[in-house]
Image (cartoon, each protein chain N blue to C red):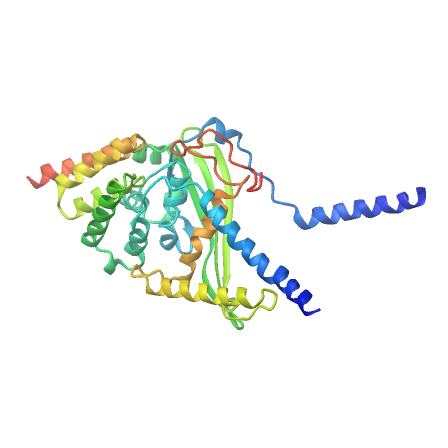
Length: 132
Length: 233
């Protein structure tokens, strides 16, 4: 009698848990891997609005550069918009050469960005000539 | 035999009708325009409604992982502001031709946050994120896709003992919720806003829901293939 009860417990409580654990591991293995290496890009975007004092342009540049190096080391791509955003941060800090470089990288990686990035570059050039 | 049949047919019909009532899914979106004007790039405008800028940072990842080029959301916001559109409402009213001139986007995603945030209701603290989206082709002005997604959480549920779940499931639940709330509280990036943690779930329903979400974009390995109409097909 008690062994029957024990079996019932096994079937009702432990088996479903075991099944759930096995299935979730299987499904986790099945999901396709991410196309991009995201690093802290979205966390920094959120922080720049929610806690701007914690995400100054300097902090963002430093973290994004570190994430970019990590992605390169793993032979992964950084997401769309990453280089354009980083270039804009460089421009805010007055590092115009670095900004140019990042904008060009965005265009090379994602030709869809050409119209947008060309205007950013044009603004940068205007700023440069104004500074001289 | 005949009598039995006579009785069972109306019963079965009634059963079918009731089953239909309980589970009628919302109508599926029509993908004809989507397939015809399949965009490569998506311009996401800051959503109208509450919580615009807390939500905005969560939308790039799902769209990019579906295979689309997504314009940098924060930079776009700033450029639009510089061009005389100070608020999301102004951006949503801007003619498509102007948005195309500024960005060269193939499609624009208009988002509305119907609900974003937490509120106390009697004895519980509930948090909701509810978002609706409309994807519009820039050149033709046609709507390519419409959808919605939401996520909801009651803070009371985490600590209550759920007798349906069993002892271990409850312990597991406690451990997991403790772990996640600690992780969220401690995050240096300030993920302390409860609703923000639900954005990913709402987006998942909005963009990935089989049969209702977006088609794969050009950077996805399955570009051109139909997404499954349900996870079990």
